[in-house]
Length: 361
Image 1 (tube, rainbow, N blue to C red):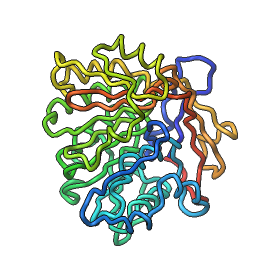
Image 2 (tube, rainbow, N blue to C red):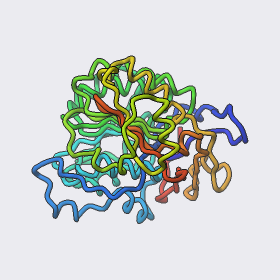
Image 3 (cartoon, helix red, strand yellow):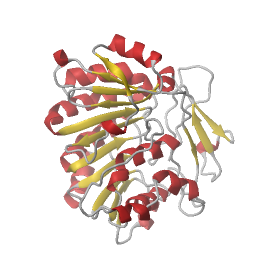
Image 4 (tube, one colour):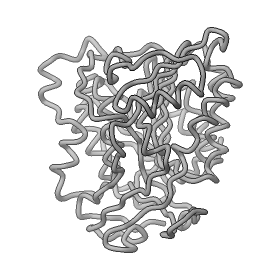
């Protein structure tokens, strides 16, 4: 789900806490709308397989009735950008914290193919009704290590884990920390809906884990509201899919100047004196530079207040920070960092889809 419970106010400080400890709100922010060609992730994937699967964006656009789903528009772009190359791979294990009304289950299976087995974790027993031969639902609190012990004793490895759960910093930190050892080679962990300053401790916590894993990390991707990591090896040449480079700089000051001077391009940051960018110190500096990608100025709902209800008709739009207006994605590799300078201020919005909704807890 796309809702995020900001108070509507003209100026920060913005965040209200989420209503209760409900799970299942989602976001995964993206980069510019670039046409992408992703090489297959498996020998089991063929060109024919790709033709049989819609994109995340087209699935969402065409979805009218069924279990509710609510995703930010740029979340769908990010799914396609990073996960589209996995379409048709079999088997494919997809885990999601936050099941709620169940609409995303069909999205994963339709877009990525019938080789998907979906593993969900939620606190709402109503989600158990979605279980079938290719869907397994676990009950439990994502902040509880014992819950993950039980989860991973049943689900040893996954290809994609999406955290669309409770969105509190400690919950996201535990989920992220426990994920890496259970990602298949080339697998992803994505954390969504990070839009409030009180969630920033999660971002700084990731720097410690990434340092521990640094020899096995392929890349880290920072989008407005979303944080994604890929385990080695990459399935495709992601860097080649980015907008053309406007040049290489070796300092933060030069980077910020280049972002303003060259909208719509990729600014490359590279400094040999820094060493691996996946050390805790370097990742801490990177988070600090781009932390305002994770502090929105609020959210507007149409109709007003719909985000707090299970109303099937609801559109939410994020109020961008200045950094969200100028950067659409930051891509960190061991020896270089690639910053996508926005061609224009992005609109981050979400339209509820489907007509069957489970009330939020």
